[in-house]
Amino acid sequence: MSERWTQAPRVAVVGGGLAGLAGGCALADAGFRVTLFERRPFLGGRASSYQHPGTGEVVDNCQHVLLGCCTNLVEFYRRLGVEGKIRWYDRLTFLEPGGRASLIEPSSLPAPLHTTPAFLRAACLDWPDKLAIAGAMAALVPMTPRDRGESFLTWLRRHGQTERAIARFWRTVLVSALNEDIDRVSVPSAAQVMRESFLKSPSAGRMGVPTVPLTELYSVAGGYLSARSGEVRLRSGVDGFRAEVAGVRLLTPGGEEGFDFVVLAVPFDVLSRMLPQTSAAEPLRQTLDQLETSPITGIHLWFDRQITDLDHAVLLDRTIQWMFHKSKLVAPASSRQPALSPVEGRGHPIPAGGARQLAGREESNGSYVELVVSSSKTLVERSRAEIIDLALNELHEFFPESRAAKLVKSTVIKEVHATYSPRPGVDLHRPRPETVWPRVFLAGDWTATGWPATMEGAVRSGYRAAECVARVTGQREATFVVPNLPPSGFMRLFRG
Image (cartoon, rainbow, N blue to C red; front, side):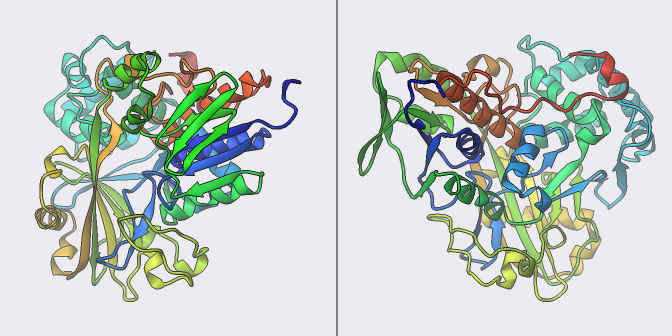
């Protein structure tokens, strides 16, 4: 610390999502006294779970996965000691209606050629599709293209992509990764996903899936902060702040409270409402007004029998895009700590004692599956019954055994404002962690992280904000952000 600090500075972190948790834990490790405010009675933000009142089952608000290239998220899991609760997969199964499968997996070839044998074997693509994809990939290898205002769909057509290649490869991968339609995605955002996950290294594309409900995964962060002289205040909203010369005062329903520094790790629309009504705040408010959101829908179905042996699958040519077989993915409740929180206004506290529902399993040999629709704009206004009927009809096409299965229960969870939309030009409006107020910093996957709206981007933003706080107080060499996964094979020849 700088000598002018006679005791550890007090830092308020507003928001208990991944950005706030990552920033708070990093600051606590660096010796700061952290107080984390979260208006809901659980940690994790959009990566959360709750006991659904209609089904009695514990459900995640949406399936979250990570890739091997998510270096900061992996480091955060190690920091918390929960890295063992992630199951890793090297193989993706692409299913066509009718059930024909194509497997995409790495080979012993050096990057960026490591998935070439799998693509050559893939039945879901014809030879013209594969040649077109190879050509576009070759264009992305040397460097990430600049944002010139065109959508990635326009870029793909300019690079000779077939309609099947666009539908069954580019759209399938990128809509899931970026939560936006490719006719609204910027070229740099799409290129960054493809380079980091597909091209740089075989290990970069490994997919990690949590084996516990999400709130159980991230509630550990609360204990981590408390063990380092921090404080976690759940059900504690913050309405705004007032920046002063010697600190920042948070405005809460219960009054005001002063801190040396504040990290605002809330969604951009929430932040806009928290900004003071002053001319100093106007440029940031106008910047936030340029950001838009895109929805995600999760469809949870419980059947009385097994409908597939697959743990997960990518589903082609239909509305639903992913199937996650939760009764195969989630660890048995008896092997986990039964310490989860309720979700205010959405469900009930998760019961202690490891009830069978915690595992997402029926006592019989049933199947619990979650179907995911990213960028689900067409579903936002549709009813629960309509969405379930659509999902069942499509599921029957991919998994014929599901036709004979009885649907025991179901639910639909819509995250209408799930992520920011990475449209062309949006990076110009993603703010840095520093603000016009020297003691106030920003965090969130929507800030200027260099990554899209992912858990990795959220953790990076929290670490960047923590670095800013630490350096202001004299810790000039403070570094929390972990570098990108290094390229391997021939990709080491390129720096872009």
